[in-house]
Length: 241
Image (cartoon, rainbow, N blue to C red; front, side, top):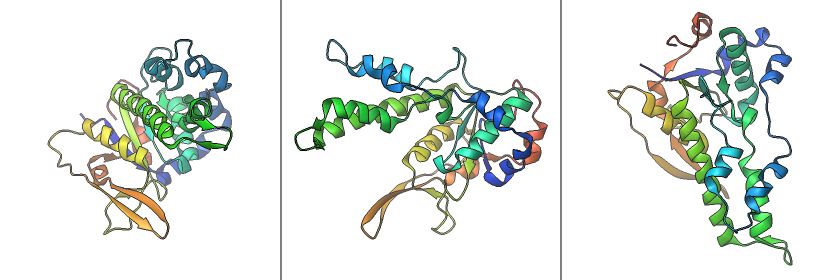
């Protein structure tokens, strides 16, 4: 059974008129006062940050103890489309959808909190390079484990294709500059039937003075594509997409 699917912003735009801003607001549970929430974890009395506890608090992978029905993978530039899709699926199909900005705090904000406490040289107003690498590796590992857990536990995953999430400049092959989208697709491709021929590699490319890492994600072609009519045919959360 297929669990990984893809759609695009054009198909989602057809759902927009059926979704109100209040439908989206109902789904949002953004972590407010995150500094107060995480302070006990980044200022531990014994000097040891509990990674698993921090993960469960800052990057929870379930809602009220239940897995999400659908994990939505998207570029941050397609936040609006992800919100519309999640709100529509909840309103008309009763499906709970995970959109990171609805639930999780920002990994960058978390890093800044930790780095300001442990890595900052206040006299020079700079950060220690080695310590910053250390904290970044831990926070990104925590985030990666949360991503893997939520993708594995969700009933289905949907990737939103767009000009922001994909770079199609090289011989028509699907690529992305986002390491997080690359990671999510790598996790999601394990949900595709094993007989599919999956190949992936990555290479670094540079443009002028800026460096970008480019990742091939052609395995997306193995994900079934969901059109507007496919969304309409969904009947309940217990049936196959």
